Image 1 (cartoon, rainbow, N blue to C red):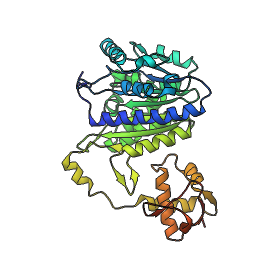
Image 2: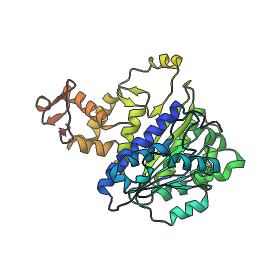
Image 3: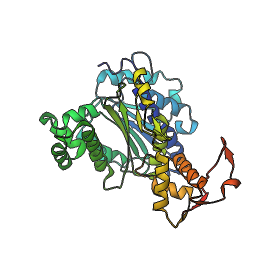
Image 4: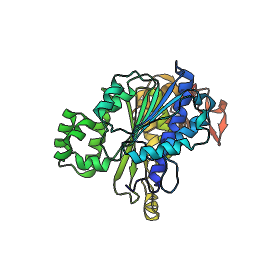
Length: 370
């Protein structure tokens, strides 16, 4: 398997998204969780290092725990890989980590196939607040049941790798019907096969991702956030990582992280995609459209909140779910409306602090819409 030969730019970004979210998740859980234990589960861990020596996600997560006195006393970590060589290599690499003996709970390393038996264990176990990472090579072992089992308890979130290329090929492949049914749900998978059969590639991708998000949302009880990775030639999607949480705060924090690692922005609005661009494609991106989506956001806010007075925080929380906008986008959209005298603010512009030459919008700044 060549995947662990050398880390790719896309894999670097994927790892940064996971480890950055681990930082904010543990910070919140340390403050809010009514338990002296927190969990981290990685079910497709790999060997721990790439052949070029680069550390992969399990080692980076464990180093964060080792370097944090409070986490050293709280974190319970479980790593698994069905490949015996990978599981053994990971165990060796973990044992070599400086300070690993400082952990109250030493990492548990397993070598087992991820399937229905494991799903049933998670379904029937009340989990401590747990962050789970599911990063399969293809799609074997990935299922709605598994994700739902991992996020069912308070404080538990899941990030998983979605190999769009392989799943796109598998949708109408009778050999892998069972795997597709596990990912989308049997009835939804059957409808999806019919729906996408004659679609063009762009429409097909949107439909597949929307159907997946709909299944994961569990009738809007869960928050789902996909991040797209595109081939370096810019021609098509290679894969997604997808975040699932029952909590609005987790969704909001992950959106900020994915915004940071997006490779393209239009008027400050992130693409929620990463393209490891080559020079030729980089020049083409300079010719992107000149549309200003934050002006459109401002017009939408004027209509939605007409006649109301709300704080910036309230506006953001009431509106941003399901949009590509982060809080800074709302600040800029409102600032543009304020400059045109289309809204009233309290405190007004001239009484607010300057930052980088621009009057700030604090969370408690009140906005009155006409």
